[in-house]
Length: 197
Image (cartoon, rainbow, N blue to C red; front, side):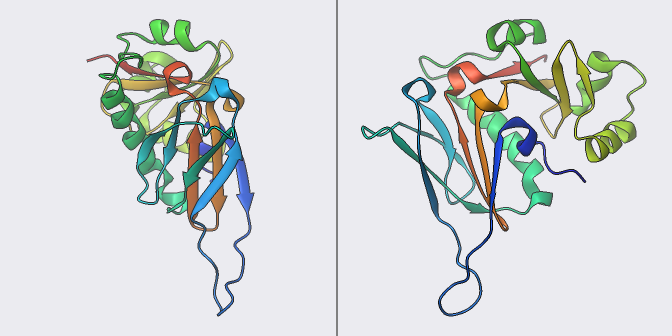
């Protein structure tokens, strides 16, 4: 497997775990980085692996937490992001879900589309069976490229999708051993939920 969906959606960073003073490895807790004002508010992970809205500090820095999550477990984070964004869509200033991919693409521009398995054939063509989609995700890291947009498949709810901006605009994926931290930049403009129900 080439990695996860996340290291294609976000700018990946990987660090080696450091040895703990009494043996074994130390466990990372937080990462802090400079963030431009246009990237706030941020959606970041906490130590329980949930997404929380985080402001940019007055010093121009932002924190996000690490949680235990192996590369093989990363797929479970996509439905969590989807449900978090769905919840935020009821908050003033956050976009409501779009009823079509065209509407979402008009808002985000270029980047990637993550489709639920039920939408892959309708977007990419009837030749894409679930078995083929899984094989393509494992071997080449994406299902297809259409009009410059990378098409990915993930465990999203039936007939749903996420349209996301380019990795430079979307945020950072940081992995330290079996610990992961995610920092997404202003999801009001970088991620759009699509529900074709």
